[in-house]
Length: 232
Ligand SMILES: N[C@@H](CCC(=O)N[C@@H](CS)C(=O)NCC(=O)O)C(=O)O
Image 1 (tube, rainbow, N blue to C red):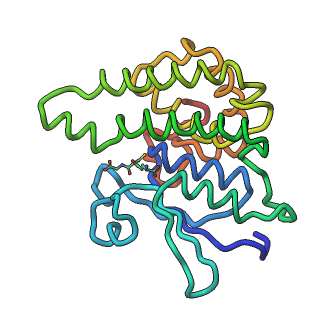
Image 2 (image 1 turned 30 degrees about the vertical axis):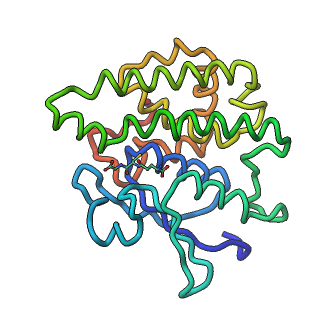
């Protein structure tokens, strides 16, 4: 990495869609990071050590080392994505804006980001699925329904804004959030082909090296049985 940026640690879990947003963005920028693995099924997000870093008891957390001895943590994925947008100077080799300059397109990009990050993911999150199971109910129908409702909204907007990607022909933060949501959707039995713009854009995104590197099947903490060269 060039000397123009801080160094980064990323608290991540292979199957976390929110962590995948950061992995994709960091790879798109070509910024190396040190992954620190938090096993969600083993409740490592609920330790006192993790609470001190992230009171929301979740991943990702992006830790920014500005100078030796001067670090801070960003414990929300969208805030971390936005931070990266703001600190990388246009003179940097890592500069690759993921938010359009045009205010209208930027607003539409952030609308798509919010559909995934505020309307869909919180409903399908691990802790919500666990709460539903505690009521002796099956969380799968709710996960599918919340994803389908969010994808219908995303499709309605992206069908008007998309070029090669969700908004125009450049990858934006909308795409960074969409592709991990599509991986989760597959687990919930959602047929992505019901959303033609989403299906087309996700297929294109999956050709990107940054997305391949960030894929949940390709992480150092991915268990052996999930490792596969080309699966969703
Ligand atoms: N709004 C948060 C959501 C983070 C979140 O829910 N992360 C999930 C993984 S995608 C998590 O850590 N879940 C652990 C749990 O629910 O116990 C963000 O965007 O960072």
